[in-house]
Length: 471
Image (cartoon, rainbow, N blue to C red; front, side, top):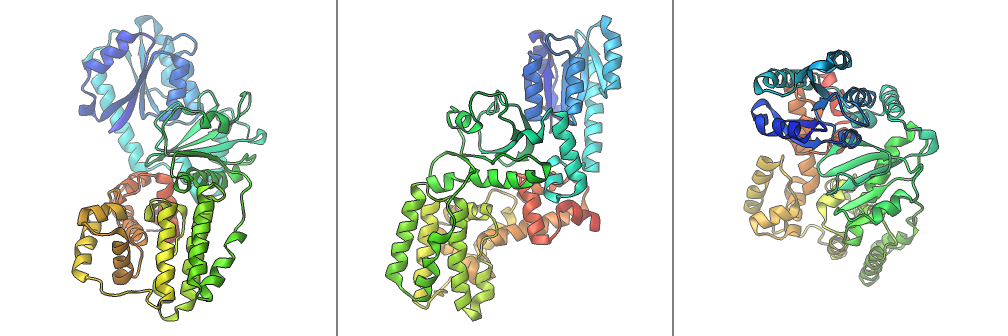
């Protein structure tokens, strides 16, 4: 389904369009309606509809100006103009700006259906051509993408030199989260919201505004200030990392990137492992967990802690090093997929350390028949929102036991196996279909287009677009 929006200052026109057309029949969902043009412009920047019905005559911002502004912002929205009989000169101007057609008031179903069909054909053609999204340009990190992003920011009225921030929200319920801060929404997906924003001319900082918000969310991360487009990719990664702070605190958290503790506190850990001092190890883990809970550390420290323990074990297990290396984490998202919170991570590190010191890192006695059912389920449901806990619930098994089954039988962690499985299917779709990149990601199990491009590049060595071009 394509997403459509209705903008008209007369409520009866909005109601007429809503009730008089069977939108889904023609491939559209109405995602928003608005009678105030300034608010409509803001909504369009946030929602980026595929199609918009715009009334030419509206107070404050006319339909003509609205189309101009959306074109300047490169929203890629198609427009159908709603007008009266005496406004044909305005209609012509709108058509010159790229509107695909117009309807006269009062609007009749027979008049609008051919325009809906035309819009759907145009959108289908666009999808087949697979125009890169802004986030794909950022992931590919090429000069052409930087120029496009710079133009987009310029058209939106942003001056990077004055200082911008990236805001990433996870499962945010309020679409107006950043009002009244000037911002530009980047399409992310998968429950993730991503914005470029400025604090200029606002009485309080973005952090204060978001920390005091009444909206519900899982986590919100705010990058440090950046002043050049070249710093945008790093700012996105910083804001994403900060958004995962709920993993540490155990509750919805707003975190702004700033100075944080280094990793020196973890220096004692490898020595305790190498000295095979179990009591010291357990005391260290308890100390780390307490410090995590008090907010001294962030998710990057949890990431470092996990991989430090695994690396130390790997170096001492020559005959198993290749298998164990597959269990190392490669990004924060894998950490979130593997563990529910910092407490579960610490418990797993205690388990691994105890097994290592007892000389039984691989404890054996796995029931192969148990794993056959699990692996078949994962292979058939890879495109769904799978997790170890979901598998544990499905098969009435302990999640740590399932995790061990993957290491034993496929020499990979569950998250790594799932990622490679999804990317393998994505490669097939890229080779054998004309689906847009973000649709390929969705079908492979990655509704977050930015994360899909990142994980694909880490596994394949190329972005999805580069991979398709090389075929």
